Length: 83
Picture (spheres, rainbow, N blue to C red):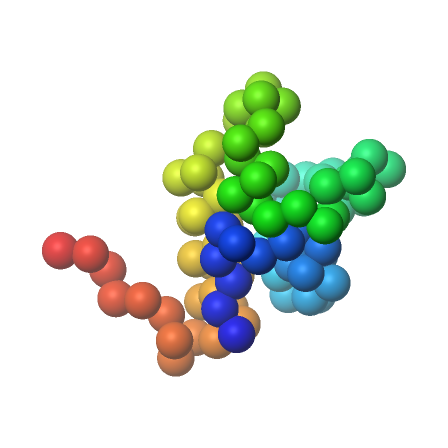
């Protein structure tokens, strides 16, 4: 399974390895009491909210986190670097 910007935050947080990577890049996100409000939203939808930018969450940063998660969970499916 590959995680993308169309994956919900809740799906990522339910996966222990993905949650660990998220906590590495954004400490406290997984334990924030307000996170329940956005768990059902896709990452793309969360990024469209103005609050995402206020906290420094850009599409590039989220994609970096997703790449790291996908590499840890399914290393054989890791995408080759772009030329």
